[in-house]
Length: 305
View 1 (cartoon, one colour):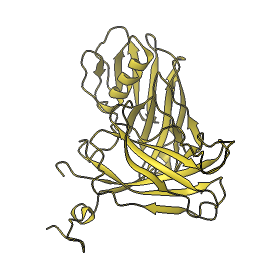
View 2 (cartoon, one colour):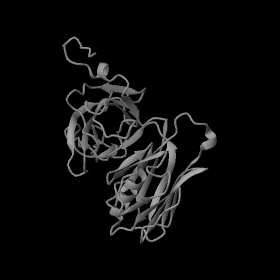
View 3 (cartoon, one colour):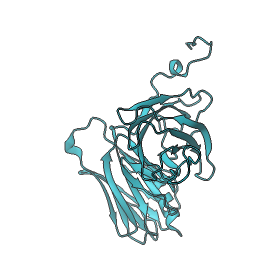
View 4 (cartoon, one colour):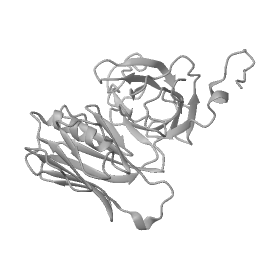
């Protein structure tokens, strides 16, 4: 039965009270893979942990891989190879290009998101790369430490990685800050940064679903409390066209003395299934090296809602 707020509007929270999540959060470890070149025959990637790994091998001709193995056909460009690897990790059916061994479709613990946009693993900056990067998350939950550390190993020089680690916020480097002029008149937002890559938000059955942003949480900042900080939030389904859904959200509250939280109503600002979430941040500070550490609370909708 639906409930209504004092303005007689249907409350999303009442309809779907258990669909809220925060990213990043400690129930996952996160990692990155950035393409350095196009893989060649027999180049590999191993993802997993001791006793449970999946090996991805680039090959000239697909065969019948054994359990725990996946074969990916060599591609004409590094970007295409990255996209096929992303699909292989996520278990996408693509018989001409991907062959799965038993227990690998999809990877039992890891989810991958392809992007050409910059992102962050905590304070570690992953720069934008035209050939593509993978933003990886590995389900940890409440497992005991004996199942870890998790593994992300490249065979061959075709990619660089940052191995799996727990992170609790994403650092945004304020590269739009201006060193000259008179703030706030010259405030320019920095580059797009991925918060949720395309294809990450799913229900428990693996279906892409609508979602919306509820809160942006500021955990730390290198800037003084007198600095104004604003965030613009976008979604994209292709990282070519970006749709702005929030313009100039004030996230400058008390950032040096404690975590600040700015909440906005997100009715009517739902993000389409499969779309990624992106952020750009501006401020009245004058250092392009200044930083702000962020996390986002979002609301995930069931299929058909």
